[in-house]
Amino acid sequence: MCRYVGYGFCLYQFLKHPSLPFHFNFSPKDFPKLKNDAFLLACRGQETPHVPVWCMRQAGRYLPEFRESRAGKDFFATCRSPAACCELTLQPLRRFPFDAAIIFSDILVIPQAMGMDVQMVAGKGPTFPEPLKEPEDLLLLQSKVDVNKELDYVFKAITLTRHKLEGKVPLIGFTGAPWTLMAYMIEGGGSTTQSKAKRWLYRHPEASHQLLKMLTDIIVEYLLGQVAAGAQALQVFESHAGCLGPAEFQEFSLPYLRDIARKVKDQLKESGQDVPMIVFAKDGHYGLEDLSQSHYEVVGLDWTIDPRSARERTGGKVSLQGNMDPCALYAPKERIYEIVKKMLEGFGTRGYIANLGHGLYPDMDPENVGAFVEAVHAHSRHLLNLK
Ligand code: CP3
Image (cartoon, rainbow, N blue to C red; front, top):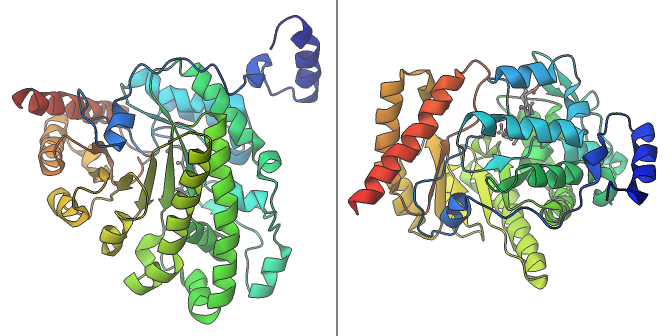
């Protein structure tokens, strides 16, 4: 596009959005051929030459180049720049042989698209100056969001990144799950108890369902948009599953997680597409059996679940992803190898994607992240050669 006739248009766009480079308008087609499909094969329980591995928050502050790129820039302004998102997504792949990339973005772009103000405050995390307080506040939300318009910057970031990956590894898109987003929108930020959000579940169950349904509809469209833009797998983060009990999970989380997978898959099927989906309900082990029957190909696990018991409880119905304690990366490299070895032997090499049980922390040593990736590849190849 950016040739001859395109130059005038590009120049116009550049003058309008000086932060966008000329190459911003890659289109979501003619993507480079995928060279490493181990991650996608593992999502579907198929044989792989090694166990694929990636890390949640692999694009993050533990990398000096990430800190340098982000320095002095507003977090959500960075999220709105496709070129910046692309660069941050690619950074960890230049260092480590990860088997998947995850687009740099944030789950809170959805509440923003619904009209809420969200800021990233240094030392505090995401902050909503005006969180939802009472059910009447739902009227202030944009319930019919034009996802293609409001979240277009994420789609552009995905398309650009898929091209710039040059087929090295697949690109994962993601979203927050309805309950996790609802909790942020009511709490106004991080919380250990989620008591303000849970107050809604007990005091205003109808309004809670109304909000969860509203979020589900937007999420479905958002995920479909990500696939159309070039995402090759999708992860749904239910990061706040742990503060729900089994009954509340059954009522306020699981039905929406199921709805999302079913609707996205039905729509994709109509256009002959099939994209693996991962559900990660952090600390939601009480829901493991249900999660393994929720139309997702992969269930992500935090580190509080033993690999063998997770396999037993999911009965071979899904692939599993996880679940080394992120803090194990503080251990010396030899110890990391031992921990990875145990984890691989617990999960087995088939239908398994190695990851941490949650994201990397900013003070982690990139060298130990490299040791983790290396250990997964080396020990899984060893196990596969024994077969
Ligand atoms: O590498 C990746 O995993 C892709 C990028 C990614 C980010 N956020 C970038 C980010 C992903 C997948 C997310 C998802 C996300 N965001 C979740 C779900 C995963 C989880 O952690 O359970 C949640 C709950 C959020 C909300 C959010 N955004 C939090 C709690 C924070 C941390 C705030 C802090 O100060 O520690 C963020 C900020 C954020 N999102 C950072 C990154 C790399 C760090 C801040 C920065 O870069 O300045």
